[in-house]
Amino acid sequence: MATGGGWVWDEPFTANEDMNAYQYHAVTTGSVAREIKLAATGSAPIPIGVLQNDPNELEEATVRIKGRTKCWVDADTAITYGDFLFSGSIGHLRYAAGSVVSAIALEALASGSAIIEVLWLGNMFAEAPDNTP
Image 1 (cartoon, rainbow, N blue to C red):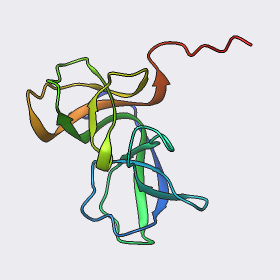
Image 2 (image 1 turned 180 degrees about the vertical axis):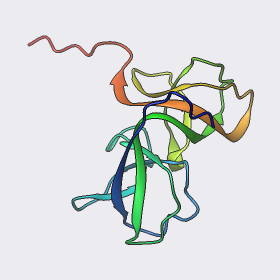
Image 3 (image 1 turned 90 degrees about the vertical axis):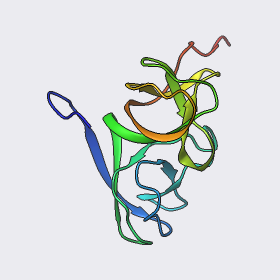
C-alpha cells in the first residue's frame, strides 16, 4: 500500500469478538461505547471504518476512519479505478449501486474477492438525500 503524502485517521476501539481473521474488513459500532463489530451490510448501522489489525475478543482494534487503506472487495460487478464502493456482507466492499458511498477504489478488480487499495471516505451520499419538509 502506498503511504507517501497520505493523510489517515485511525481510532482505537475494542473488538466485541475474535476478529483475528477480519483484518481489512469494514466494521461498525458494537452494542457498548468504544466497541466495534464486523459490518454485516451497508446499513444497520453503517460501517465506521476498516479494521487495520487482527485483535482477539476484548483487545484493542485499530480502525481507519478516513484515508487510504487496504480493504477486502467483492467484484460481483467489475470494479475500476475511481468507482464508488459500499459495505456489503461480511465486511467486504462492493460496487455502490445505491446512494451511500463508503470508499473509492484506487485499484481495479475484474472479478472475485481480493484485498485492494481504497480511499475510505466514511459514509456519505453520492446524491443529496431529500430533506424537504
